[in-house]
Image (spheres, rainbow, N blue to C red):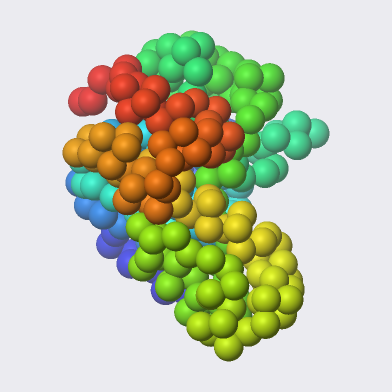
Length: 273
């Protein structure tokens, strides 16, 4: 995969690993809409505020909503694409240590609770290398240390990338018709599959069923619409194919742990620069 050296340099990526022992800190409004494929020797904690950020790896597409963070293990190649150039992204990059908790070896998306919010707010004025032995390094390391204890709910806000081209066409069909009720039997018939063979294809390629994929994709679109703050909860439910607001609300709660109305009214606590 080719990278745009100019853009990678512009987004400080090469500075992250310059000092192998430091914790690197970078907070900024994106200003542009794409950080190309890259990787670093340090693990990354990326917090988003203001809109959605799409993080893509070789096997998965992650959907990072505002007021959540994604943990990206060291050495994992990825690209970053915020939906809006006004997204505030707050990054902490941590050196890998010996015998680390398994938490740090797995990518995942987690909600930011009040404790973590306060700790992140404290990092607001930091930028660049946090040197070992400094107060800022100690505080940043405490943020890392507390994550396995408080981040126990890894949210299923990612979708696998299909390898089979036939499945890719089906998923594009789902994407283009989220406002309609899509029945598995009808999809199978339209694309020339028996229900049994299409079920097996989903399980083999994506490691999930059609209904699991479809449900997560609807909720991800719903989050995106809620963050735009242009539609009511009822209107958002209709836009992603739910005729029943209670059913939509219950499904949303099962995935994110909060009701869409609560999510819509959530305060953006961290101040932008």
